Image (cartoon, rainbow, N blue to C red; front, side, top):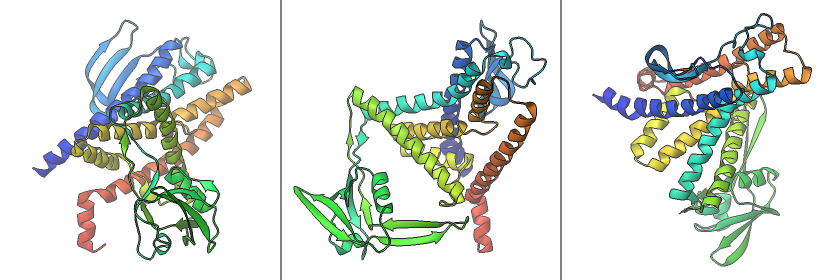
Length: 369
C-alpha cells in the first residue's frame, strides 16, 4: 500500500498546489484580456477531454479537463499569420495591449506570492535576517580566532553586512591568502577578528574558474517576529524581489557553469518538495512553498524565449518600436531557436527527475553505480 501513501502525500499535494499556481497565472492573462476587450473562447484547467464546464454570459467556456496538470486560456487568432487575420482576433489588437495580456500571467503569480508572503509575516512572523553564528567548523578560520556561537557578524572590512547574500558578496571581494577583518558583536561588546578566509577554486564544465571563500561558520535561523500590516507589505514586496533575484542568479550560474546542472528539477522534484511540506503539517510552510513555486513560474515565463510569455511580450515591443509586425521568417527562426533551448532544459530536468525516482535509484544501487 506504499504507493497509495505516496499518491496521497506527494501526488495529491503537488497537483493541488500546482493547479492553484497555474490558475492564478491564467487568471492574470484572462483578466488582462477582458480588460482590453480580447475575446476569450475558453479558460481550462488541465488538458484532454472536458469533464466539467459551463459557458458564461460573455461566451467564455470555463472547463475542467481530464488530465489535472497545467491549464490555458484560448483566444481566437493566436496562430494567425500577418495576412488574412479574422476580425476580432488577437493580432488585430495594438501591440501594447497584447504586451500587457502576455505579462499579466507572470504578474498574477507575483501578486499571489506577495499577498501570501505578507499574510505569513502578519500571522506567523518574519525571521530576523541577522548573521548570528550557531557554530564553527573545527580548524576553520573562524574557530582559530575564537569566533563563538552567539556572535553576530556585522561587518567585513569596511562593508556592513546584514544578510547571507551580503556576507558572500563581501567575502568575494577578498583576495586569496589576504587577511580580512571580521567585525562581530558579542553581547554588548564590539570585537574585531583578523583572519584569512579558506579559499578553494575549481573549473566548471565551461572551463571557467569558480572561486569560493569561507569563514567556516554555521548561521542560526532568525527568530520569527510578527509584523504590522504596513511592515508586512513592505517586507513582502522586498522579499519577493530578493527571492526573484536569487532564483535568477542561480539560473545564471547554471548557464555559466558555476552551478551544477543537477540542481535543475522538474515535476518529480516539485512533487517531492510538495509532499515534504504537506507532511510537515505546517500551514505556513505550505504557503511559503506556494510562494516559491509561484515566483518560479512567474520568473521563468518572463524569460524572452518563444513559447513563453516573455517571448510574446518581446515581439510586441519590437512591433511597437518598428511600427510593423515582426516578419514570419524572423518569428520562425527565433521560435526554432527557443524550442531548442527550452527542449534542452526540459531534457535536463527530466533526466534529473528520473535519476531521483526510487526505482531507478534501486537499479543503480544493484549495478553498483
